[in-house]
Image (cartoon, one colour):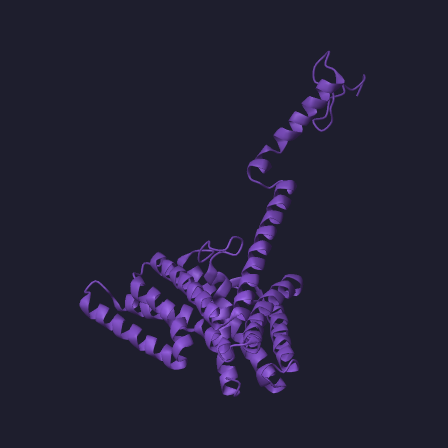
Length: 323
């Protein structure tokens, strides 16, 4: 090529764009071009700064909410049986309400008056009458559902089944926390209940961290794609550890064989409870059961493992002669 090749300014460098422009004007022009080139990513929220800020905000919200949740529950557990019952009744009512909300989204019409009333009565009956009280409330709920079904032509059997199942799933199971706490009005009962609930919490936490770091084999990809077998085993080991600490401390006579059985069973069934609620949400097309807990979703999202885990723990402790 003959002659000197004409130099063209690059869009990535602050070159002169018009005769007579100053260096400052060229720099401003370059910055404007860079800004325009990232406008689509900025609108979509995909800039690195935006992503980092969003992740930090979510992490802080989730951590703060989780810490408040943990502190309140632990404080109430050691406060006594009555405060524990009041808290469990409130949580059961909210969980049952979220369950009915998802049922309505699935096209069902459960009788919420009967279901939510039973969700409050189950923990109160557990405190006042023990297991017999739970049986009494269950019978009354079934009878009420039967009368409603007979007297209401528009009600179908699915609505009746969900009306009964909602409080049984969210409240009767949760009432096992009250039964375990009622074994001893003092600190020993509080420590035993905290150990049971703590094993479920640590199971969830370790399953998440181990699964995030080492997870390779999916546990239930169609229901919960992020769960892995590696996370499951990590959570199970932590559940057994908490139960062994109860045995080491001699809480209510828990033995090491019982601790091993409790840790394995509670850790396993808690995962089933988590997958069960995930299946419900996937069936109605929602990500969270509600928005009661910022950063976590609904209260049922935080309690799904606890519901199945605590009823399993109660049975283990009852059959092991502790309760």
